[in-house]
Length: 263
Length: 230
Image (tube, rainbow over all chains, first blue to last red; front, side):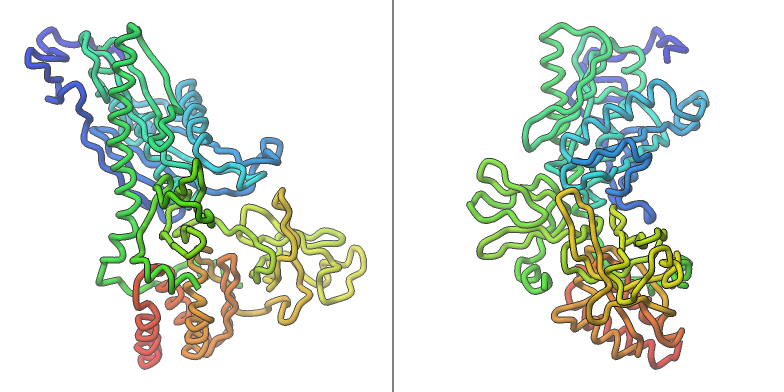
């Protein structure tokens, strides 16, 4: 971050009020979600959000290991956020770091709020988020993908969590910041939102905002989350309705999996 | 059993958080109620009955229910019990008192070893989800030979079919012995070619579980394969 300064001739917001990539302040980057992309995972989702590419996989509920973590009354939602070494401009040193620990923690806490954890005592629901390509806003993309993957895995939950960020760039409150806006902007507020109950399950702030700016940004982020929510629901519904319409089904192949199971 | 009422309701797919109804009906499986409204809690197909609303899930783990017939795999042996993996988040101990043989303390391994496949029944699930299983009932036993395949537990009712119609057809057409556990494990024994055919048919059922006219499709598939001799 902050390696090269913003060239003097580039304006984050131009005189027409448009942003670097031509969006208006309340406009999101294009978002595409696909559910059920991984065969081996119980549930999965792939999200392309602007130049972000994020994959989420869910396993479980399954027996919780290590044993001492398990809760006799509810399930544990364990999240693991990881950035691929090739996801950013300069190679990221692989492995967990302070930032990925933080994001893992906040995402698992956000998801714990919607999952019916009391249905599965002593188990853990494991969520793996892999960032393949990053362009600011990966925690929001990760949370969005993770909640679709959870639903795809058949985990009972109160609602999906939709997530989007707001921020302040060139003294303007905008929604869904891209890389340049994040790096050279003044503030960033990622929001995780549960539309049905109108609850906020994730809220962070990086940078300085006045109270008015914050309130405006929060409302813009919530409005964007509602759009994200619709795309999430469509992705889940599409997963099954698309297949029902699929006419030519390839002949099933006997796979190694079956042979492995056999004695 | 689900097949009939879901068909009539045009198979509306719901996602968690969807409002299903504002009514005093009972919130069935896959749903929850809040403030007099019933919402979906799982991805599935909405199913409305006279007194309740439920969601038939399209995915999910197997949750044991008392009385379920399941196919388990021995994963560990203790001096007075076997630990059975039942394809659920919880392992199930099978106590020596619950098997059809008289087993002396410490002689469990003489009867069944790790990797053995057993046909058992769930006899107890408590609020902490501790499970007890039994092999003492008609037809319950250790399964020798054959092969085991796994499908999503939510698709088991489709493999069995209405009043067992689908599974009966599979058995007749492939001449295999088949046991379908509620936990999504299926044990098949017969001629190798026939096993392969049965496995393919079951995979097809799993893939197209929510399609209409599934029985006819499977019948056609089985008929076409039997002629070629695979």
